[in-house]
Image (tube, rainbow over all chains, first blue to last red; front, side, top):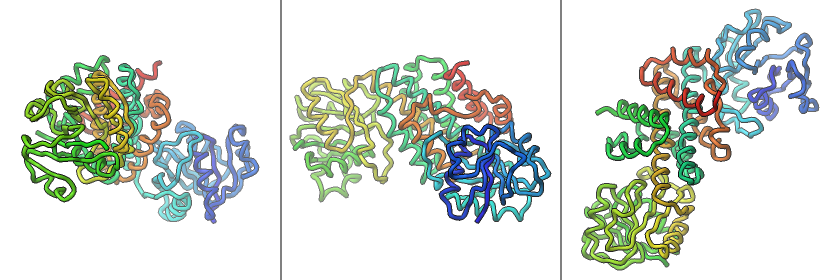
Length: 252
Length: 252
Protein backbone atom coordinates (compact mmCIF):
# COMPACT_ATOMS: atom_id res chain seq x y z
CA UNK A 1 0.00 0.00 0.00
CA UNK A 2 1.40 3.39 -1.04
CA UNK A 3 0.34 6.24 1.22
CA UNK A 4 -0.13 9.61 -0.41
CA UNK A 5 -0.72 13.16 0.80
CA UNK A 6 -2.43 15.40 -1.73
CA UNK A 7 -1.69 19.11 -1.74
CA UNK A 8 -4.04 21.40 -3.66
CA UNK A 9 -7.72 21.36 -4.59
CA UNK A 10 -7.86 22.10 -8.33
CA UNK A 11 -8.96 19.88 -11.20
CA UNK A 12 -5.83 17.74 -11.20
CA UNK A 13 -5.93 17.20 -7.44
CA UNK A 14 -9.60 16.24 -7.58
CA UNK A 15 -9.10 13.79 -10.42
CA UNK A 16 -6.05 12.28 -8.71
CA UNK A 17 -8.01 11.87 -5.48
CA UNK A 18 -10.70 9.93 -7.31
CA UNK A 19 -8.22 7.75 -9.17
CA UNK A 20 -6.21 6.98 -6.02
CA UNK A 21 -9.33 6.33 -3.96
CA UNK A 22 -10.49 3.78 -6.52
CA UNK A 23 -7.25 1.81 -6.17
CA UNK A 24 -6.63 -0.82 -3.51
CA UNK A 25 -2.92 -0.18 -3.75
CA UNK A 26 -3.05 3.48 -2.75
CA UNK A 27 -4.28 5.13 0.40
CA UNK A 28 -4.78 8.89 0.47
CA UNK A 29 -3.60 9.65 3.97
CA UNK A 30 -4.47 13.29 4.01
CA UNK A 31 -5.59 16.09 1.69
CA UNK A 32 -4.27 19.57 2.34
CA UNK A 33 -5.46 22.85 0.89
CA UNK A 34 -4.71 26.30 2.32
CA UNK A 35 -8.43 26.99 1.99
CA UNK A 36 -10.47 24.08 3.31
CA UNK A 37 -13.74 24.90 1.51
CA UNK A 38 -13.18 23.25 -1.89
CA UNK A 39 -12.26 19.90 -0.26
CA UNK A 40 -14.81 20.07 2.54
CA UNK A 41 -17.17 17.74 0.67
CA UNK A 42 -14.59 14.94 0.97
CA UNK A 43 -14.24 15.12 4.77
CA UNK A 44 -15.97 11.77 5.28
CA UNK A 45 -13.69 10.02 2.82
CA UNK A 46 -10.30 11.40 3.79
CA UNK A 47 -8.55 13.40 6.50
CA UNK A 48 -8.68 16.98 5.21
CA UNK A 49 -6.64 19.86 6.59
CA UNK A 50 -5.65 23.47 6.00
CA UNK A 51 -2.80 23.33 8.51
CA UNK A 52 0.45 22.70 6.66
CA UNK A 53 2.43 22.35 9.88
CA UNK A 54 0.34 19.35 10.88
CA UNK A 55 0.91 17.18 7.79
CA UNK A 56 1.04 13.46 8.55
CA UNK A 57 3.68 11.05 7.38
CA UNK A 58 3.17 9.58 3.87
CA UNK A 59 5.27 7.76 1.29
CA UNK A 60 4.61 10.39 -1.36
CA UNK A 61 3.47 14.03 -1.27
CA UNK A 62 1.88 15.31 -4.44
CA UNK A 63 1.73 19.06 -5.02
CA UNK A 64 -1.07 19.72 -7.51
CA UNK A 65 -1.33 23.49 -7.47
CA UNK A 66 -0.77 26.39 -9.86
CA UNK A 67 2.72 26.53 -11.37
CA UNK A 68 3.72 29.75 -9.63
CA UNK A 69 2.92 28.41 -6.18
CA UNK A 70 5.09 25.29 -6.28
CA UNK A 71 8.25 26.98 -4.97
CA UNK A 72 6.61 28.50 -1.93
CA UNK A 73 4.43 25.61 -0.90
CA UNK A 74 7.31 23.18 -1.19
CA UNK A 75 9.43 25.48 0.99
CA UNK A 76 6.74 25.51 3.64
CA UNK A 77 6.51 21.75 3.95
CA UNK A 78 7.36 20.96 7.61
CA UNK A 79 9.53 17.91 6.87
CA UNK A 80 12.58 16.84 4.89
CA UNK A 81 14.03 13.81 3.10
CA UNK A 82 10.60 12.72 1.91
CA UNK A 83 9.49 12.17 -1.68
CA UNK A 84 7.69 15.24 -3.03
CA UNK A 85 6.28 15.38 -6.58
CA UNK A 86 4.65 18.18 -8.50
CA UNK A 87 2.18 17.58 -11.35
CA UNK A 88 3.05 20.41 -13.73
CA UNK A 89 4.08 20.07 -17.35
CA UNK A 90 6.20 23.17 -17.29
CA UNK A 91 7.63 23.69 -13.79
CA UNK A 92 11.26 22.70 -13.28
CA UNK A 93 11.60 19.71 -10.94
CA UNK A 94 14.17 21.70 -8.99
CA UNK A 95 11.60 24.31 -8.07
CA UNK A 96 10.59 21.86 -5.38
CA UNK A 97 12.61 22.79 -2.29
CA UNK A 98 15.76 20.70 -2.08
CA UNK A 99 15.22 19.66 1.52
CA UNK A 100 13.07 16.84 0.09
CA UNK A 101 13.58 14.24 -2.65
CA UNK A 102 12.05 15.61 -5.81
CA UNK A 103 10.12 14.33 -8.75
CA UNK A 104 7.35 15.01 -11.25
CA UNK A 105 4.08 13.16 -11.75
CA UNK A 106 2.67 14.87 -14.85
CA UNK A 107 -0.68 13.56 -16.05
CA UNK A 108 -0.84 14.60 -19.68
CA UNK A 109 -4.53 15.13 -20.20
CA UNK A 110 -7.14 17.87 -20.19
CA UNK A 111 -9.15 17.79 -16.99
CA UNK A 112 -12.62 19.25 -16.95
CA UNK A 113 -14.20 20.13 -13.65
CA UNK A 114 -16.86 17.61 -12.79
CA UNK A 115 -16.36 15.53 -15.95
CA UNK A 116 -15.49 11.91 -15.36
CA UNK A 117 -12.26 10.74 -16.90
CA UNK A 118 -11.06 7.18 -17.12
CA UNK A 119 -7.44 7.15 -15.94
CA UNK A 120 -6.67 4.57 -18.60
CA UNK A 121 -6.72 7.62 -20.86
CA UNK A 122 -4.23 9.56 -18.74
CA UNK A 123 -0.58 9.00 -19.57
CA UNK A 124 1.51 9.74 -16.48
CA UNK A 125 4.91 11.23 -17.30
CA UNK A 126 7.40 10.54 -14.54
CA UNK A 127 10.63 12.30 -13.67
CA UNK A 128 12.61 11.61 -10.48
CA UNK A 129 15.74 13.11 -9.01
CA UNK A 130 16.87 9.92 -7.26
CA UNK A 131 16.83 6.78 -9.38
CA UNK A 132 15.68 4.72 -6.41
CA UNK A 133 12.43 6.68 -6.23
CA UNK A 134 11.36 5.66 -9.72
CA UNK A 135 9.88 2.31 -8.82
CA UNK A 136 7.39 3.60 -6.22
CA UNK A 137 6.29 6.48 -8.46
CA UNK A 138 5.74 4.09 -11.34
CA UNK A 139 3.71 1.84 -9.03
CA UNK A 140 1.59 4.83 -8.07
CA UNK A 141 0.99 5.74 -11.71
CA UNK A 142 -0.06 2.21 -12.58
CA UNK A 143 -2.25 1.96 -9.48
CA UNK A 144 -4.07 5.12 -10.61
CA UNK A 145 -5.00 3.24 -13.77
CA UNK A 146 -2.81 5.23 -16.15
CA UNK A 147 0.06 4.24 -18.39
CA UNK A 148 3.38 5.47 -17.08
CA UNK A 149 6.22 6.93 -19.12
CA UNK A 150 9.66 7.81 -17.79
CA UNK A 151 10.89 11.01 -19.37
CA UNK A 152 13.50 13.70 -18.80
CA UNK A 153 12.98 17.44 -18.36
CA UNK A 154 13.53 18.29 -22.04
CA UNK A 155 11.04 15.64 -23.06
CA UNK A 156 8.47 16.94 -20.59
CA UNK A 157 8.93 20.45 -22.00
CA UNK A 158 8.42 19.06 -25.53
CA UNK A 159 5.25 17.27 -24.44
CA UNK A 160 3.87 20.33 -22.70
CA UNK A 161 4.53 22.43 -25.79
CA UNK A 162 3.01 19.76 -28.06
CA UNK A 163 -0.05 19.64 -25.84
CA UNK A 164 -0.68 23.31 -26.61
CA UNK A 165 -0.77 22.46 -30.32
CA UNK A 166 -3.01 19.39 -30.08
CA UNK A 167 -5.29 20.77 -27.39
CA UNK A 168 -5.48 24.59 -27.19
CA UNK A 169 -4.68 25.35 -30.83
CA UNK A 170 -6.81 22.52 -32.16
CA UNK A 171 -9.66 23.76 -30.00
CA UNK A 172 -9.20 27.22 -31.51
CA UNK A 173 -9.56 25.71 -35.00
CA UNK A 174 -12.84 24.18 -33.79
CA UNK A 175 -13.79 27.66 -32.66
CA UNK A 176 -13.03 29.13 -36.09
CA UNK A 177 -15.25 26.45 -37.65
CA UNK A 178 -17.95 27.35 -35.15
CA UNK A 179 -17.75 31.00 -36.27
CA UNK A 180 -17.84 30.08 -39.97
CA UNK A 181 -20.85 27.78 -39.64
CA UNK A 182 -22.67 30.24 -37.41
CA UNK A 183 -22.17 33.03 -39.95
CA UNK A 184 -24.23 30.94 -42.42
CA UNK A 185 -26.76 29.80 -39.86
CA UNK A 186 -25.75 26.18 -40.14
CA UNK A 187 -25.38 23.87 -37.15
CA UNK A 188 -21.87 23.32 -35.77
CA UNK A 189 -23.20 19.90 -34.71
CA UNK A 190 -22.79 18.67 -38.29
CA UNK A 191 -19.01 18.94 -37.85
CA UNK A 192 -18.80 16.99 -34.59
CA UNK A 193 -18.49 13.50 -36.10
CA UNK A 194 -15.70 14.75 -38.38
CA UNK A 195 -13.88 16.31 -35.42
CA UNK A 196 -14.00 13.00 -33.59
CA UNK A 197 -13.02 10.91 -36.61
CA UNK A 198 -10.02 13.18 -37.30
CA UNK A 199 -8.77 12.56 -33.77
CA UNK A 200 -9.47 8.83 -34.02
CA UNK A 201 -7.62 8.53 -37.31
CA UNK A 202 -4.24 9.47 -35.81
CA UNK A 203 -4.62 6.91 -33.03
CA UNK A 204 -3.45 4.32 -35.58
CA UNK A 205 -2.18 6.35 -38.55
CA UNK A 206 0.58 8.97 -38.38
CA UNK A 207 -0.63 12.55 -38.93
CA UNK A 208 1.65 12.58 -41.97
CA UNK A 209 -0.19 9.65 -43.55
CA UNK A 210 -3.61 10.84 -42.38
CA UNK A 211 -3.43 14.17 -44.23
CA UNK A 212 -5.97 14.89 -46.99
CA UNK A 213 -7.65 17.98 -48.42
CA UNK A 214 -7.04 20.79 -50.92
CA UNK A 215 -3.61 21.85 -49.59
CA UNK A 216 -1.94 18.44 -49.98
CA UNK A 217 -3.65 18.03 -53.39
CA UNK A 218 -2.43 21.51 -54.35
CA UNK A 219 -5.98 22.19 -55.46
CA UNK A 220 -5.38 25.89 -56.13
CA UNK A 221 -8.95 26.54 -57.26
CA UNK A 222 -10.44 25.38 -53.96
CA UNK A 223 -7.73 27.13 -51.92
CA UNK A 224 -8.55 30.42 -53.63
CA UNK A 225 -12.28 29.93 -53.26
CA UNK A 226 -11.88 29.22 -49.54
CA UNK A 227 -9.66 32.25 -48.94
CA UNK A 228 -12.17 34.45 -50.71
CA UNK A 229 -15.03 33.05 -48.64
CA UNK A 230 -13.39 33.89 -45.30
CA UNK A 231 -14.56 37.20 -43.85
CA UNK A 232 -12.25 37.65 -40.89
CA UNK A 233 -8.66 38.65 -41.49
CA UNK A 234 -7.34 36.28 -38.83
CA UNK A 235 -9.23 33.36 -40.36
CA UNK A 236 -7.55 34.11 -43.68
CA UNK A 237 -4.16 34.28 -41.95
CA UNK A 238 -4.71 30.90 -40.27
CA UNK A 239 -5.88 29.40 -43.55
CA UNK A 240 -2.82 30.65 -45.42
CA UNK A 241 -0.30 29.66 -42.76
CA UNK A 242 -1.59 26.14 -42.18
CA UNK A 243 -1.93 25.56 -45.92
CA UNK A 244 1.70 26.62 -46.27
CA UNK A 245 2.67 24.29 -43.42
CA UNK A 246 0.92 21.33 -45.07
CA UNK A 247 2.63 22.05 -48.38
CA UNK A 248 6.04 22.36 -46.65
CA UNK A 249 5.50 19.09 -44.80
CA UNK A 250 4.50 17.18 -47.88
CA UNK A 251 7.11 18.65 -50.18
CA UNK A 252 6.75 19.53 -53.79
CA UNK B 1 -37.42 0.34 -51.76
CA UNK B 2 -35.28 3.09 -53.26
CA UNK B 3 -33.23 1.98 -56.24
CA UNK B 4 -29.85 3.64 -56.71
CA UNK B 5 -27.18 3.71 -59.38
CA UNK B 6 -23.69 4.49 -58.12
CA UNK B 7 -21.26 6.31 -60.39
CA UNK B 8 -17.58 6.31 -59.40
CA UNK B 9 -15.27 3.98 -57.51
CA UNK B 10 -13.44 6.14 -54.97
CA UNK B 11 -13.61 6.13 -51.19
CA UNK B 12 -16.99 7.84 -50.98
CA UNK B 13 -18.56 5.53 -53.58
CA UNK B 14 -17.20 2.47 -51.79
CA UNK B 15 -18.47 3.60 -48.40
CA UNK B 16 -21.86 4.49 -49.86
CA UNK B 17 -22.11 1.10 -51.53
CA UNK B 18 -21.52 -0.62 -48.19
CA UNK B 19 -23.98 1.58 -46.34
CA UNK B 20 -26.72 1.16 -48.98
CA UNK B 21 -26.13 -2.58 -49.24
CA UNK B 22 -26.62 -2.93 -45.49
CA UNK B 23 -30.05 -1.28 -45.71
CA UNK B 24 -33.25 -3.14 -46.52
CA UNK B 25 -34.74 0.06 -47.85
CA UNK B 26 -32.18 0.63 -50.60
CA UNK B 27 -31.22 -1.48 -53.55
CA UNK B 28 -28.09 -0.66 -55.53
CA UNK B 29 -29.27 -1.43 -59.03
CA UNK B 30 -26.00 -0.88 -60.76
CA UNK B 31 -22.50 0.43 -60.17
CA UNK B 32 -20.77 2.26 -62.98
CA UNK B 33 -17.13 3.22 -63.29
CA UNK B 34 -15.35 4.15 -66.51
CA UNK B 35 -12.63 1.70 -65.48
CA UNK B 36 -14.15 -1.54 -64.25
CA UNK B 37 -11.14 -2.81 -62.27
CA UNK B 38 -11.65 -1.05 -58.90
CA UNK B 39 -15.23 -2.36 -58.63
CA UNK B 40 -14.57 -5.80 -60.10
CA UNK B 41 -14.46 -7.35 -56.63
CA UNK B 42 -18.14 -6.47 -56.13
CA UNK B 43 -19.41 -8.21 -59.27
CA UNK B 44 -21.17 -10.94 -57.30
CA UNK B 45 -23.00 -8.42 -55.15
CA UNK B 46 -24.14 -5.89 -57.72
CA UNK B 47 -24.42 -5.36 -61.45
CA UNK B 48 -21.20 -3.56 -62.39
CA UNK B 49 -20.57 -1.79 -65.69
CA UNK B 50 -18.16 0.49 -67.52
CA UNK B 51 -20.65 1.28 -70.28
CA UNK B 52 -22.35 4.58 -69.53
CA UNK B 53 -24.75 4.21 -72.45
CA UNK B 54 -26.23 1.08 -70.92
CA UNK B 55 -27.23 2.47 -67.51
CA UNK B 56 -30.39 0.92 -66.11
CA UNK B 57 -33.33 2.81 -64.71
CA UNK B 58 -33.07 3.84 -61.02
CA UNK B 59 -34.81 6.25 -58.68
CA UNK B 60 -31.58 8.06 -57.87
CA UNK B 61 -28.19 8.33 -59.58
CA UNK B 62 -25.31 9.26 -57.32
CA UNK B 63 -22.17 10.72 -58.88
CA UNK B 64 -19.31 10.15 -56.43
CA UNK B 65 -16.27 11.15 -58.45
CA UNK B 66 -13.60 13.85 -58.37
CA UNK B 67 -14.94 17.41 -58.38
CA UNK B 68 -13.57 18.29 -61.80
CA UNK B 69 -15.26 15.35 -63.50
CA UNK B 70 -18.85 16.07 -62.37
CA UNK B 71 -19.72 18.34 -65.30
CA UNK B 72 -18.61 15.92 -67.99
CA UNK B 73 -19.94 12.71 -66.51
CA UNK B 74 -23.32 14.29 -65.86
CA UNK B 75 -23.42 15.48 -69.48
CA UNK B 76 -22.74 11.99 -70.71
CA UNK B 77 -25.61 10.40 -68.81
CA UNK B 78 -27.86 8.79 -71.48
CA UNK B 79 -31.16 9.86 -69.90
CA UNK B 80 -33.04 12.93 -68.73
CA UNK B 81 -35.63 14.01 -66.15
CA UNK B 82 -34.16 11.66 -63.55
CA UNK B 83 -32.82 12.59 -60.13
CA UNK B 84 -29.04 12.96 -60.19
CA UNK B 85 -27.02 13.86 -57.07
CA UNK B 86 -23.34 14.57 -56.61
CA UNK B 87 -21.52 14.03 -53.30
CA UNK B 88 -19.09 16.92 -53.30
CA UNK B 89 -18.75 19.58 -50.62
CA UNK B 90 -17.56 22.22 -53.04
CA UNK B 91 -19.08 21.58 -56.48
CA UNK B 92 -22.03 23.75 -57.44
CA UNK B 93 -25.26 21.76 -57.75
CA UNK B 94 -25.78 23.34 -61.16
CA UNK B 95 -22.64 21.73 -62.50
CA UNK B 96 -24.81 18.66 -62.93
CA UNK B 97 -26.22 18.84 -66.45
CA UNK B 98 -29.63 20.45 -66.45
CA UNK B 99 -31.28 17.72 -68.51
CA UNK B 100 -31.79 15.91 -65.17
CA UNK B 101 -33.21 16.97 -61.79
CA UNK B 102 -30.32 17.95 -59.62
CA UNK B 103 -29.27 17.65 -56.02
CA UNK B 104 -26.42 17.10 -53.59
CA UNK B 105 -25.86 14.24 -51.19
CA UNK B 106 -22.77 15.42 -49.27
CA UNK B 107 -21.52 13.05 -46.57
CA UNK B 108 -19.49 15.27 -44.26
CA UNK B 109 -16.87 12.88 -43.00
CA UNK B 110 -13.31 11.77 -43.67
CA UNK B 111 -13.28 8.45 -45.48
CA UNK B 112 -10.24 6.25 -45.21
CA UNK B 113 -9.73 3.51 -47.77
CA UNK B 114 -10.47 0.16 -46.21
CA UNK B 115 -11.34 1.59 -42.78
CA UNK B 116 -14.79 0.75 -41.52
CA UNK B 117 -17.00 3.69 -40.70
CA UNK B 118 -20.33 3.56 -38.98
CA UNK B 119 -22.74 5.68 -41.00
CA UNK B 120 -24.31 6.87 -37.77
CA UNK B 121 -21.22 9.08 -37.68
CA UNK B 122 -21.78 10.47 -41.16
CA UNK B 123 -23.98 13.56 -41.37
CA UNK B 124 -25.56 13.72 -44.82
CA UNK B 125 -26.05 17.28 -46.07
CA UNK B 126 -28.83 17.45 -48.61
CA UNK B 127 -29.55 20.04 -51.27
CA UNK B 128 -32.19 19.60 -53.98
CA UNK B 129 -33.25 21.71 -56.93
CA UNK B 130 -36.90 20.57 -56.88
CA UNK B 131 -38.60 20.65 -53.50
CA UNK B 132 -40.50 17.46 -54.32
CA UNK B 133 -37.23 15.51 -54.51
CA UNK B 134 -36.31 16.25 -50.91
CA UNK B 135 -38.34 13.51 -49.31
CA UNK B 136 -36.80 10.60 -51.24
CA UNK B 137 -33.26 11.94 -50.74
CA UNK B 138 -33.88 12.29 -47.03
CA UNK B 139 -35.20 8.71 -46.94
CA UNK B 140 -32.05 7.55 -48.68
CA UNK B 141 -29.85 9.39 -46.15
CA UNK B 142 -31.70 7.89 -43.22
CA UNK B 143 -31.65 4.42 -44.80
CA UNK B 144 -27.87 4.69 -45.09
CA UNK B 145 -27.76 5.08 -41.31
CA UNK B 146 -26.72 8.72 -41.25
CA UNK B 147 -28.36 11.81 -39.88
CA UNK B 148 -29.69 14.08 -42.60
CA UNK B 149 -29.49 17.86 -42.72
CA UNK B 150 -31.15 20.06 -45.31
CA UNK B 151 -28.87 22.93 -46.23
CA UNK B 152 -28.44 25.50 -48.98
CA UNK B 153 -25.41 26.12 -51.20
CA UNK B 154 -23.88 28.81 -49.00
CA UNK B 155 -24.22 26.58 -45.98
CA UNK B 156 -22.58 23.69 -47.78
CA UNK B 157 -19.70 25.97 -48.77
CA UNK B 158 -19.36 27.04 -45.11
CA UNK B 159 -19.32 23.42 -43.98
CA UNK B 160 -16.74 22.42 -46.57
CA UNK B 161 -14.52 25.30 -45.53
CA UNK B 162 -15.00 24.51 -41.83
CA UNK B 163 -14.11 20.90 -42.51
CA UNK B 164 -10.70 22.03 -43.73
CA UNK B 165 -10.13 23.71 -40.36
CA UNK B 166 -11.30 20.86 -38.15
CA UNK B 167 -9.84 18.09 -40.27
CA UNK B 168 -6.86 19.08 -42.46
CA UNK B 169 -5.56 21.94 -40.32
CA UNK B 170 -6.14 20.11 -37.06
CA UNK B 171 -4.29 17.14 -38.50
CA UNK B 172 -1.40 19.45 -39.38
CA UNK B 173 -1.25 20.59 -35.74
CA UNK B 174 -1.00 16.91 -34.78
CA UNK B 175 1.86 16.70 -37.28
CA UNK B 176 3.65 19.65 -35.67
CA UNK B 177 3.32 17.92 -32.28
CA UNK B 178 4.72 14.76 -33.85
CA UNK B 179 7.76 16.74 -35.05
CA UNK B 180 8.28 18.39 -31.65
CA UNK B 181 8.08 15.14 -29.69
CA UNK B 182 10.28 13.34 -32.20
CA UNK B 183 12.94 16.03 -31.90
CA UNK B 184 13.27 15.13 -28.20
CA UNK B 185 12.99 11.40 -28.75
CA UNK B 186 9.74 11.12 -26.87
CA UNK B 187 6.81 9.01 -28.05
CA UNK B 188 4.00 10.77 -29.92
CA UNK B 189 1.77 8.04 -28.45
CA UNK B 190 1.73 9.92 -25.13
CA UNK B 191 -0.31 12.67 -26.82
CA UNK B 192 -2.95 10.41 -28.33
CA UNK B 193 -5.34 10.31 -25.36
CA UNK B 194 -5.20 14.13 -25.17
CA UNK B 195 -5.95 14.42 -28.89
CA UNK B 196 -9.01 12.23 -28.46
CA UNK B 197 -10.20 13.95 -25.28
CA UNK B 198 -9.89 17.39 -26.93
CA UNK B 199 -12.19 16.20 -29.74
CA UNK B 200 -14.59 14.58 -27.27
CA UNK B 201 -14.80 17.71 -25.15
CA UNK B 202 -16.44 19.78 -27.91
CA UNK B 203 -19.08 17.13 -28.51
CA UNK B 204 -20.91 18.57 -25.51
CA UNK B 205 -19.11 21.84 -24.72
CA UNK B 206 -18.69 24.74 -27.17
CA UNK B 207 -15.08 25.30 -28.32
CA UNK B 208 -15.36 28.72 -26.68
CA UNK B 209 -16.08 27.20 -23.30
CA UNK B 210 -13.66 24.33 -23.76
CA UNK B 211 -10.61 26.56 -24.21
CA UNK B 212 -7.77 26.37 -21.65
CA UNK B 213 -3.99 26.88 -21.70
CA UNK B 214 -1.39 29.63 -21.52
CA UNK B 215 -2.91 31.91 -24.22
CA UNK B 216 -6.32 32.28 -22.57
CA UNK B 217 -4.64 32.69 -19.16
CA UNK B 218 -2.32 35.29 -20.73
CA UNK B 219 0.54 33.39 -19.11
CA UNK B 220 3.25 35.45 -20.82
CA UNK B 221 6.08 33.55 -19.14
CA UNK B 222 4.97 30.22 -20.61
CA UNK B 223 4.18 31.75 -24.00
CA UNK B 224 7.71 33.15 -24.22
CA UNK B 225 9.28 29.90 -23.06
CA UNK B 226 7.34 27.95 -25.67
CA UNK B 227 8.24 30.31 -28.51
CA UNK B 228 11.89 30.08 -27.56
CA UNK B 229 11.75 26.30 -27.48
CA UNK B 230 10.43 26.00 -31.04
CA UNK B 231 13.16 25.39 -33.60
CA UNK B 232 11.30 25.69 -36.88
CA UNK B 233 10.25 29.11 -38.09
CA UNK B 234 6.86 27.88 -39.28
CA UNK B 235 6.13 26.31 -35.89
CA UNK B 236 6.83 29.68 -34.27
CA UNK B 237 4.53 31.38 -36.79
CA UNK B 238 1.71 28.94 -36.05
CA UNK B 239 2.25 29.33 -32.31
CA UNK B 240 2.10 33.11 -32.53
CA UNK B 241 -0.90 33.27 -34.84
CA UNK B 242 -3.07 30.81 -32.95
CA UNK B 243 -2.14 32.41 -29.64
CA UNK B 244 -3.23 35.75 -31.10
CA UNK B 245 -6.47 34.15 -32.32
CA UNK B 246 -7.25 32.74 -28.86
CA UNK B 247 -6.58 36.10 -27.24
CA UNK B 248 -8.78 37.88 -29.82
CA UNK B 249 -11.59 35.38 -29.31
CA UNK B 250 -11.53 35.66 -25.55
CA UNK B 251 -11.11 39.42 -25.43
CA UNK B 252 -9.12 41.41 -22.97
